[in-house]
Structures are given as C-alpha cells and as structure tokens.
Image (cartoon, rainbow, N blue to C red):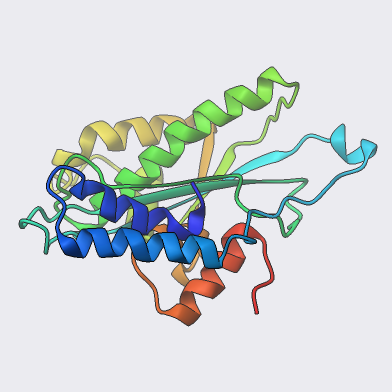
Length: 224
C-alpha cells in the first residue's frame, strides 16, 4: 500500500458493507488523487557491491492516534501505524520506508499510552518477522532493532516498569511481552518527536502542506 493513501484507505475500507454517497465520493476522490500523483513512488537508492555485502540495520517507527474514530458509531477506536526502513551503521540514507502499515485495531484503548503501546506491540511483532527474513538472506545483525515512538510514558513502561502501579494492570499482557523483548535486547525503544516521526503520516488526516512534507519524509521523495 502506498503510504500517502494508507490512512485514507483504512478509513474508507470500513464502509464496504453499507457505503453511503459520501463514502463513494471519498473513493472517487482517492482515485483522482492516485491518477494525479501516478508518478509518485517509494524511492530506494541503489548500492554498489561493497554496500551489498554490508550488514544493514532494521529500524522501525510506531505511532497511534488515540480514539480518533469517535464519530463513527461511537466506537472510540484508535489508529495504529508502523513503518520500517534499513540503514547501514546508523547512517541516514534518504531512502523511503520499504514497509508501511496503518490499521484500525479491533479493541478500544482506554488511554493514549495504551494506544501507543498497541502500536509499538504491532511494530515489534513486525520487527520479529522482518528480522527473520533478513537472517534468511544472510543479514545476521547482533544489534537490537530500534523502534521510535513519540510517547514517553509508553517507552518508560516498556523499559523501566517496576510492577508497583495497579493503574496499568489492564495492559499487563502487552506490557510484559514488551519488557521481555526489551530485556532480551531484541528491540530498543527510543523517543522521537512527533514532527520527525514518519509513522505519524498514517495516523490521521493532515493539511495539504503537512501531507506533502510527511509523504516526502516517508517515501524518500523531493516534492515541490
């Protein structure tokens, strides 16, 4: 799925059973958008033979929009987005995200931290899958997969939770699994400001100017 339509497609796809005229108009608008932007695509830079033999590092980003779907039958569900790119020795390559996913979860989150943790859990599960694929093609990295998120309470809970607070007991299954992956050094959770977080593109609608900025960041393109 193209990252620039991930959120819109996730939104409109929920009305396949009983679509309204408004939903049909949204789908037609999206079709016109794709035709107008048919020359857009994810930019992946070529590499030479020396770079092809280097060990690349998988890097992920996770973000969530808490209770963004409140207007739809009062569901109150959030929106999760995860994306991944590859870097060599932590050096920014300027390439686009080779994996991008925006979903509407099946459960209702009770607070923003739970929504962010849900998105981080999804990104961690994807990291396990993608790292396994990389190992099958000879990319055996010994470093943990860095996953960036813009919610500090979520990162704190997943890395330094003492087990004393009862307020988060409804999150314990996800929390314990995240702590396990962090302690195993399989993943490393890091903070990144929302304005710099690529996954923010798939969590909500943006203004035209902000949308172009986010698309350029995620797809590795120069958009004028």
